[in-house]
Image (cartoon, rainbow, N blue to C red; front, side):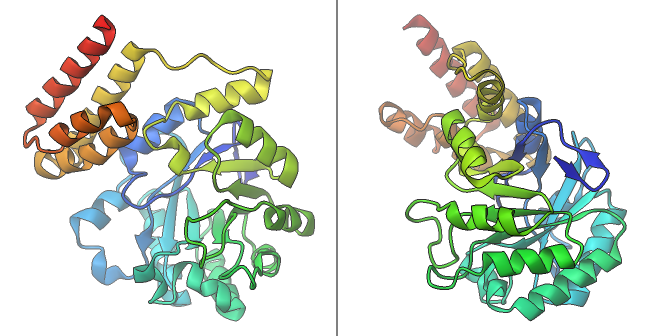
Length: 322
């Protein structure tokens, strides 16, 4: 799949997820085979850029792979300015968010709320594309409600506005993350535009990735929640797409190494206080099994980096013994 001058090595992309796809997580997913990892959503409002959260999201030093930065907002001029600033800071692709269903985003008429306003969608896309000389991509949902799936219309606007590729989550804004993703709309979009289309939603196994690619005809799949606590999912999917065979589950020693490295990089990026708190949710995803509920509860009470490291080491030592 080609995005502007960038030829992706395969059909696997990491979805942007606020509070999840920071640099440590993106780099892990890229190492395990993802061709592209899109950054966390960044507001186009410059008044909020002077915060630790925004500064960390806008920094790209040490970034692996192609640097794709997602921006969100409703004002064409502000979105264009945000795109320019992020390109100056190292972004190689600008991704526009018109898929986020969160109330705090939608109440500002940003994210998936924009799908109700095709003319505003057009104005934003044209402004951003005209403002930068890097590829601009777009992420949407299939519409704002099941009875208002206008994904094909939005996709055609995107193509006409110069968007380089389009990612589509197979739910409407009203659906949030409930129920099953539907792929008929993504299939229809692919059949009605010539730009690359990326299918997103409920892709959490190699078999599901194969099915979605075949059913929709999409050029790639975008994986979000399925990779939380499982960055090696990209390796598993790519192996299955290439061979038709499933890889053996990840070995305990490799999982230990990945988790400890992930936590180390979180501490380095955020500092001890914030880093160990962010580490709690990632450890919860890595160990998301009923038998480990008590471990996670104890882990979440720890207040130092060394305590977290030691408890994880003991946990894996016990796994190896058993």
